[in-house]
Structure formats: C-alpha cells, structure tokens
Amino acid sequence: MEYEVLTYGNKLLRRKASPVEEVTDDIRALVQDMLKTMYDSDGLGLAAAQVGRPEAICVIDIPPMRDEETGAPKRENPDVRMPLVLVNPRIIERDGEQVGSEGCLSFPGIFVSVKRAETVTVSFLDMENESRTVRARGLLARAILHELDHLHGVLLVDRMSPVQKVAVAGKLKRLRKQRK
Image (cartoon, rainbow, N blue to C red):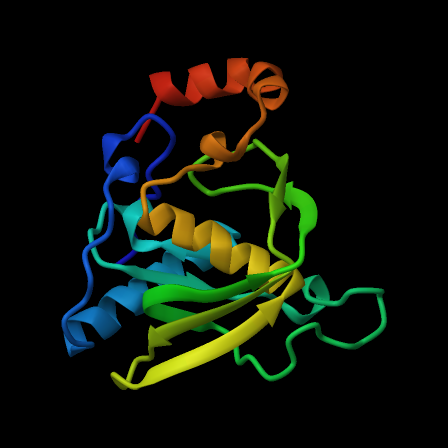
C-alpha cells in the first residue's frame, strides 16, 4: 500500500510519535509501504508522521551518488547499509556543524539552508528487534536529524530563519490552503 504524504498545514505533522513496543510483521509491512511511498515521491527519507502514522519510525535511503563528498567514488558512510530503517531512534551524540540545503516531502518545492550537526550517533531498533547504533556524517547525518525532527513534531518551517520564512511565505500559504 502506498501512502499519501501529508503536507504543511496538516495537524498530524505536529503530533509526537509513539514508541513501538515490538517490531512485528505489521510494523515490517508499514516500513515496506513507507519505503515505497518515499521512493515513489523521490525522497531521501520519510517519517511515519508524514503519512499520518503515530509510530516512531523513519526510513532513509541515500543513493551512492548523493553520498559522495567530492565527486570521487567514495561514500561518506560506507559501513551504513541502505535503506536505513530506524525504529524508536534516539540521538546519543552530535558533533560539529554543517549548513546545507534541505527539502522535505511535506514541503514540496521548498528548499532552505539549515544548520545541523556534521556527525550524529543514533541508537534504534532494527527490523529484527535488535538494538543497534549507527554513526553518520554529512548528508546521512542531516537526513537522520531531519526525520527525527518529524518524530518530535518539528517541521522544516521551524528550522527556517525569519528571512527564509518571508522568502517562501507565498509557497507556505498555498500549501496550507491545499493541504493533504
């Protein structure tokens, strides 16, 4: 089943996620549906909140060509297998700083510069109910932090400066009017 991605203005995007008690076949099916929805929407990440679900789950898939720092065929996070599925994710450590352009499936057509940590360590449950930890840097760290924001009801608009909000005010107003 493919979900419809909720857009800015939908109140469900502000809901804080509920922890998953156990990774069951129903949760695995939800993850597969979220991955399909993300791929069909040309996204790099998707949180359950973006499809109206309350579970603390997010999926991320950074294609190799997007994860290369300098154009050389070297991935920033070669030890992290994609897609990355995070159930009940929790940031353990943040380090450094990066500023880069971010978009969001819930804010189609809007891209703004956002300051994030350069490196993050996140703990989570995998699809086999095993506790895991991943250390990520660069674009993957940015994607993890972005999706975890969704699980806490924090949206891209909350990360915008006042000047950025003014610059995209018309687009935000249109999204609120046509919200899904």
